[in-house]
Image 1 (cartoon, rainbow, N blue to C red):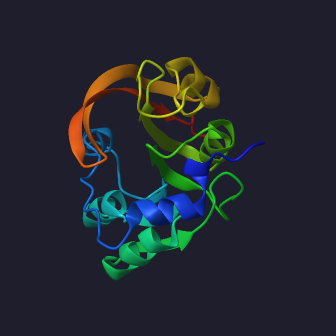
Image 2 (cartoon, rainbow, N blue to C red; image 1 turned 90 degrees about the vertical axis):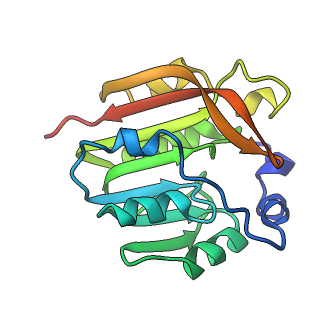
Length: 193
C-alpha cells in the first residue's frame, strides 16, 4: 500500500522539531477509565507520552509506541515509573502480549485498518479499547483516506461490547491552533473468556 508523505517517520520528525510540543492529555481519557481498575495499557501513537504519563499517575503500567524517534526520546526523558516507550511503526508491529487497555488517539492515518486490527488483537479478555480519530465529516484537515467513520471503528471491534460509539465535537490543537473538531469515538470491551 502507498505510504503518504505525512505518515513517514521523517514527516513526524519534522512535526516534533526542535521544541517539545506539550500536547494536552486527551479530553475523554479520564472519563473513559474513571471506573476501570488500573492494569496494563498500550498507548498507540503516544507522541511525547502525555496520555501514558497520565495513565501511570493513575496506577496503570503503560507501553507507549510511536513512529517518531524524537517524540519517543522526549517521552523517555519525562517517563514516570510504570511507563516505557518504544519507536515502532504501528502499521506493521505486533505487541508481545495483551493489555487491559489499548488507546489510540489521532494516530491512525490511511492504513487505519492495520492499526485498528493490531489494537483490537492486543486487548486482553475483559479489557477495553478506546479510539478517538478525526471523523469523516472533518474538512480541510487531513486527506479523506485518513479520516474515519463510526462504522469503520465499530467494525474493527466486532465481537466486542460497544460501550460508546458516537461523533462528538472535541477541542484539539492542530498546527498551533485549538478548535473543536468532529471526532469519531469508540470505547469497546472484549468479553471476558
